[in-house]
Image 1 (spheres, each protein chain N blue to C red):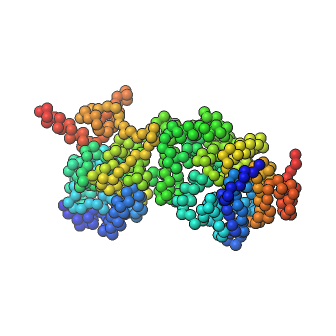
Image 2 (cartoon, helix red, strand yellow):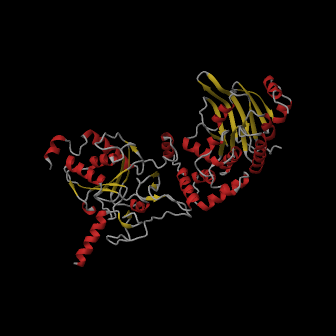
Length: 286
Length: 257
C-alpha cells in the first residue's frame, strides 16, 4: 500500500461519517429500485460533470480487498477513466484492473461492459441528470409529485413526439426505463444498446449524481423495462458493422474518424472486451 | 333546452368559502350542478369567480364548505385519487391557452397526453384519436404535427378544448374560454362549444364576465359580487328580469351595438 496515502488520507478519501451517510442513501436506494434518494454530496477534487457522484458512491463501497476497474465510454484508457483509477489507487491503495471479470467494483461512464457481470460485482454509474422527467417538467416539486403518484404519461408524450417527428423513437441514449414496475428512471446516458443488460443483472447497479445530489439503484435481478409503444416497440440497436480490430458483430461500436477524406472505422467501445478477443485470436492463430 | 335532471346532482357545493388572509375570496357559495347542465358564473373582476372555480377544480383548498362530485367528497379525497379524477372525469379550460397547452409539443402530443396518462400505449390509436379530435374542433388534420405556437389564438383555444375533452370528462370547468379572442372567432368557438356540450352531454361550470357568452351557453346563471352569490336562476330569467341591484347594473352596462 502507498505509505503517503495511508498517512494523509482516510481510506478512500472520504471521512467515515460521509461514507456512513452515503451508505445509508445507497441502502435506501437499493430498497426502493429506481427511486432517487437525496444525499449530501461533498466537494471532490474534480469538477462537477467529471463523475463526482460516481466517485463518491465508489468511495463508499470500496473496501481494501476490492479490485477496481474504471471505464469511460467503455474505454479503460481515456483521461477520465485513468485519472479516477489513479485517484483511488492513491487514496485507497486498492488493486486495479482493466479486466471486467477480475473487478469487484466497476465505475463506469455511459456504458455497461460487454462481458456479462457476476453476482459479486458492483457497477457504479456516473449520472449527469438523474431525473428522467427533467426536460419535460422543469419544476422539481412537480416531478417528485409525479414520481410519487406514478404519473408517467408525460414520458410517453416525449416518445410520441419522437415518432411524430422522426417516424421512430429517435432516442439513442438515456432511454427511460421502468424499474420493477414502479419508478421510471433514467439509466444514466448509456446507449439504448445497453438497456437490456440493466434487467435481471446479477450485479448491484448504483447510480450517483453528484451535482444533482441523488443516488438511485437497481438491486441484483431487478426487472427493468424500457418504455415504448405497443406498435413501436423498444429495439436495442448498434452501428451495422463488425469491429475492425476484433471482428465482433455483437458489441457496441464507436465510429472513429480517421482522416478528412471521409475515412472512418468502427471499433468496439469496450476496450477490455476488444483486446481480450483479439488476444485470443492471436494466440489461437499462433 | 335543459336535459332532464337525473336523480342526483353531478356536483354539489355547500357553504364554500375561501379567504386570502382576512380578505374574502368567496364565501357561502352553495349550488347543485346536474348532469348535462351548463352553469354560468358572472360578476365583475375581483368578485370571486375565479377563486370559486379554482376551489372547485382542486387547484386551491377552500377554507370551509363541502364539495361532492358524483356523490364523492372531493375535499376528503386523497391526492392521487383527486388528480386521477381531474385527468379523467374532469377537465379545466384556461382563459389563456398557453396555461393549458404544452407549447413545445405538437398538437397531436397535446391531445394524446391525457390518453397516455391513463395508460394508452398504442401510437396508432393515439394518433387516430388525435386526428378525430382535431376534426371535431375544426382544425385541419394536416396540422397534427405542428406546435401550438404556430397556431392562431382561436386555434390554440380549440386545441385546448380538444385536449381536455379527449378522455370524455363529465364535468368541464371553463375560465373565460372566449377571453382575448376577437368577436368572429368568439362566435365560432361558442358555436363549437355549444355543439360539443350538447353532443357529449357535458356538465360545465363556466366563468366569464361576458353576458353574451352565458346567454348562449348557460342554462343557469349565478351572479357574484364581493365574493358572494347575489342572485341565481335560469339564465334568461336572470338576464331579462334581474332582481338584485348589482345584476341590474351589470345587465344595463352591456354596450349595445
